[in-house]
Amino acid sequence: MSENLHFVERGRRTTEKSQGFLKHRALDLANLLENFQISVAGGVSSLLGSVGSAMVVGNEVLRAAPTSDVMKFLGMGTIGEALTKLGINIAQLTPPLAIASGILTLSGAAVGWQGAKQGSAFERMTYIGTKALETVAWVAAPLLGLPITVPLVASGLGLLHNIWSNRHTPGVISRTLS
Amino acid sequence: MLQLLSIVDYQDNKDTFIGEFVELIYKQALVDLLGSLTANEQETVRKLVNEQKELDKAVTALLAGEWAQKYTLALALASKKMLEDYVIEINDTLTDSQKEMIELLFQTGREYLVMQ
Image (cartoon, rainbow over all chains, first blue to last red):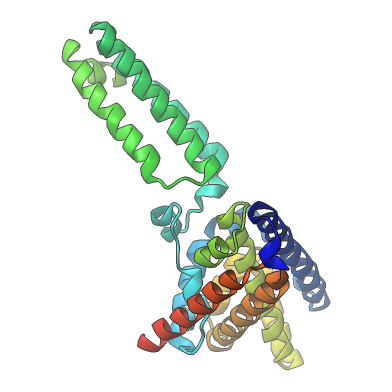
């Protein structure tokens, strides 16, 4: 019967069931830990490091119990892999990452604009375009779980444009920063 | 785990799911460890864990001390059980091809571990 379900509907049901599984298991374990008079908080601190910790734990498990066929999966990643491997869960950092990257991008844009505004209409237009793309990419990446390479490429374009436009205003970056 | 969630077409944030899934593995392993100990040993572990206040710190403490071997084994077993239970839970929403891909993923994982 599963074959007949619409793809999206099936995915939605799987997602609901998955989250239900976590919820029920969490309740069961909370009760069991309470019986043992164990009190530990999960929360942000735990979740921020959880994937990275899982890799450490995974390595320990692989060493101690090489027949385990599970922990290997916990170390696999695609989205924000580099950050995840450092124990940083990009999805958990959405508000601070979006705010910080937004501020940094706009600061950089303001500095670069000093040069770009002295250029041609084409230069001004492309400057605004790359900065808008950069800002959107940085804000969207953590929100949508995009690969970290997307905002990095956008920032690369923005940086190249900054360098190009700064030919009108040599030294403006150091002056602004100081 | 990310591959598994992609295969089953998990539509929400996968990193968050994995974070919560791992947290449950930590807790399940802790419960299993406590269940295998004598009353005195349980008391020692209980104190150690409660002193840490946060789960990730408690896990680190357990893996660093005298309980490392037992807790590591408990983690391996809890991981296996949790993953099996999860796949069983969502089984009726999966297509035959998804089930085959999961089987292949598990098989690849086993072969990878044999090579380690």
